[in-house]
Image (cartoon, rainbow over the protein chains, first blue to last red):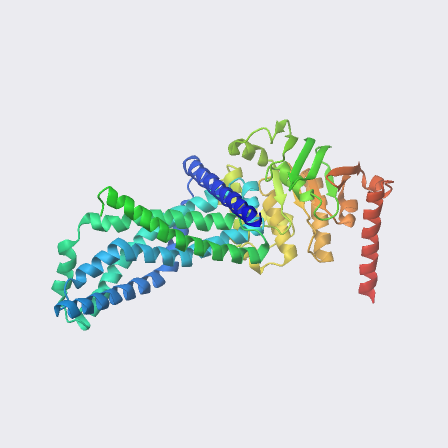
Length: 261
Length: 254
C-alpha cells in the first residue's frame, strides 16, 4: 500500500510539473507575439550568459580536444605504427557530440543555475508579484529575454568550443605526435561535410530551449526562502544535465533518421 | 469604489476566505486586521488578481476583475492600483530611481525622458532625497519601504494596497510609514486598503477596520467601534495586543 501511495504521489507530482511547464511555455509564446520585446534585457542576458560561461567552456573544449588527440593518436600508433586520422577523430567527435553536449552542460551549470537563483530569489521576495502590479509579467520581463539569450549564446559558445577544441587537438598532434598541421587539418576538412556540422549545431537549440525551460521553471516555482532558492538551484542543474544527455540521444536519432548525420 | 461579494478562497480544503462581502468607499482607509496566517494577504492579493479565488465578485468601479481571464483586461483594472508589498519587493538589479519609475513604462504613456524627474518627485513625497542612484541593498529597511511606496504611487493610482506596512520596522520608521499612509490619503485622495496585525497602526490610521478571523469578517467598524466591540475574539485580539505592547515597553524601561 505504501509503495502504491508513493508511486501515485510521484505520478501526480510529475503531472503537476509538466502541466505548469506547459502553461509557462504557452504564456511565453503568447507574450512573445503580444508584447514589446525587452531588447535591452535580451542583450544584457545574452552577454551575461555568454561571458559567464565562456571561460569554463573554453577550458573544457580545449582539454577535451587535447585528450581526444592524445588517445586517438596513441591508439592508432599502437595499431598501425603511426597516428592516423587524428584530425578526423577529433573534428567529428567534437563537432557532432562533445562540443555541443559539454558546452550545454557548462552553460547549465554556470548560467542556468544563476538564472534559477535570480528568479527564485525574486519569487520568494514577492518581486514576481510586483511585476504584475507594475503592469508587466514574468513572461515578458524575465522569461522571454532569458530564453532568447540562451538560444543565442549557446550556439555561439558551441561554435567557439568547436574551434578551441580542434585547436587543442592540433597542439597535442603537433607537439606530442609530430603530425604536420596540413595533415591534421586536411583530415578534418576532407571528410567533414556541412551536414556533419549541422548535426551538432542543430542540437544546441534544443539544449538551449531545455536549459532555459528548466532554469526559469525551477526559479518561478521556488518556495521556502533562502533554503528554497538553494534547493531549486541544485535541482535545476541536476535536471538540466540529465535532460541534456537524454535529449542528445533522441535528437541525434531523429537527425540520423532524416539524413542529417 | 471596491465592492467585494461572497469571496471564497480555499487552500488545502480550508476556507481561508469564506463568503466574504464588503464595500470599500472612495477616499477611505480600510484596514483588515487579524492574526498572522488568517488570510489577510490573500484578501488583498485577490483584489488585484495575484491570487484567483474560487468564487465571488470583486467589482472595482463597475468592473469585475474576476470576470475575465484575459491578462490584458486584468491589467487594465490593475492599473488603478498601487501595491506596497510586505518586504518592499524592490528589484535588486535596479537602482532606486529605476525601481520607482519601473511601472511608468508599462502603466502610462509618459515619455522616458521624464522618468527620472517623476522618480525624484515621488521620492521627495515620501521624504527621501539624493538617493536616486543608490542600489537597493544600500538602503535600510525603512528606506526600502518608502522607496517601495514611491514606486506604488508613481503612476498616480486611485487605490493603494498596503501589505503589513510596518512589519519589521523600528518604531521611528513605523511612525514615518503611518504618517505617509495618512498623507497619501489626505493629499492625493487615494483610497487605501491596509492589511496588518498591528492594532496600534489600525486604530491610528483607519476610517474603518474589518476584523478577519477564520475566513470571515467578525466585525467591520470604526476604530472606536472596534475598541468597544463586544465580540469575544475581537476583544481578546485587541486586549492581547495592548498587553504585549505594554510588556514590550516596560521591558525596554528595565
